[in-house]
Image (tube, rainbow, N blue to C red):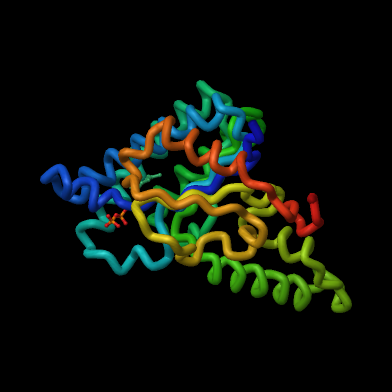
Length: 238
Ligand code: FPP
């Protein structure tokens, strides 16, 4: 089987899953966070090397304040669990997105976790937090302009595709081979727009907390059965 090197997942349906069980939305988020742990383990066991999840978008701040607060508390706990998992499984964790809007204690926990796990050679796990692809591209352009203005980069710097990739939050991480979105929606919702230029998409009606190892394998099998016409960087592979 052709196992994708990098799988990206849009986690969707925590709220609907909880509602279907007569439970509050926050219960869905708790179980959704738990499932992230499970899928990290399954992904590595199946030979996936990079996993990126869309946990909190730049648009998610507009949810009711109470729900955002509950997600942030969940995140605080999750980052602690994640450190233990990283240590146990030698998982490297990185957060993509604009971290500056997160509470200082969350930013500090992220910095600690990234530093702690930076040399681990197990699964490379990226969590998108306060992430939006357009915002990522905007920040990249802004940082290049600043570097040119301050003389760090020469004025005649050639802007190649590789140069742009190397200024995104995902610098150094290969583009996703497979993108999965759970819970029935079939759109990218501002996730990895640049990086998904040649990515295969897989959509399922299953809500995120119910997305099991079997569901992951179903997606991988579907991916494996496809004939990809283009490689990650755009070169024709067939
Ligand atoms: C998706 O379901 C939920 C989110 C995008 C918000 C937060 C995500 C989690 C708690 C899971 C992972 C968490 C961590 C900490 C890594 P939804 O609320 O959009 O569901 P709905 O579409 O059914 O309302």
